[in-house]
Image (cartoon, rainbow, N blue to C red; front, side, top):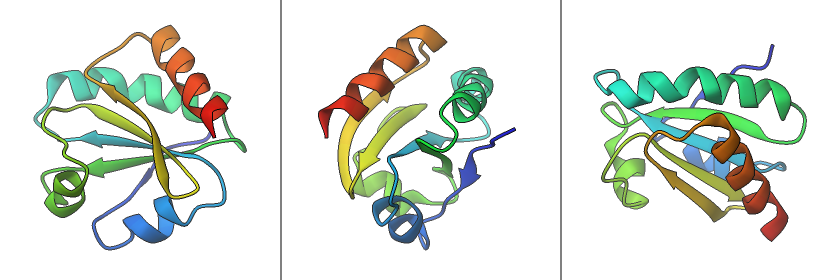
Length: 110
């Protein structure tokens, strides 16, 4: 089963912006209830999109620089990157069907 990998301020550029596949980044924090609700959905999607999309998680408490750089003000926020560019953004908890549709839309853009 594919699992989202943790990224940090230090390795964000290497693991996300320089990735050869599209990357979804789940910006979250341990104290955030909706983040805990979206996490299992993100894990299911990581499985379904294995080989097509990399799934990552960034703890905003531990990695404030990256969160600030991308203007993350509320969590969970999911950003989709393709070729080092942000191509999608989903803020707040959304049902799986909505996340899939928005992920597919973002992937179709680039």
